[in-house]
Length: 103
Image 1 (cartoon, rainbow, N blue to C red):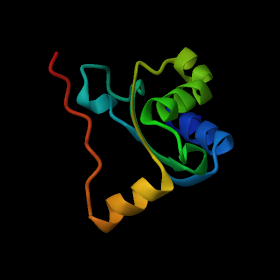
Image 2 (tube, one colour; image 1 turned 45 degrees about the vertical axis):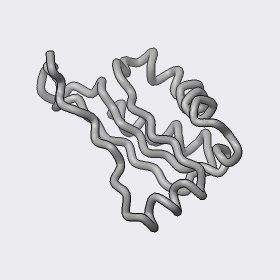
Image 3 (cartoon, helix red, strand yellow; image 1 turned 180 degrees about the vertical axis):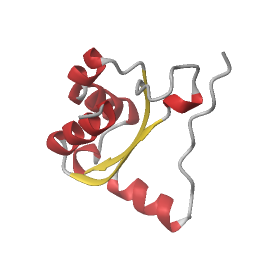
């Protein structure tokens, strides 16, 4: 199983997910073709309701400890409450994309 799939499966097992996107951003970096070490995650989970952003990020990082040990180098987390996600969709706001590597 790829690391990206492993991230997705772990998050699905750890949270009551309403929306989940896991994107490998490694192609934007100076790494060999096919490498999976840079990821972006968009996650909406009921567990995030009432939690500050830093707490949501910590929850995601805690859920993915094994995946970090398996080789995640960078993880961009976009963690939303149900209400934030509904508002974002109603306003047709885009999720920020990870930039290309500058190095």
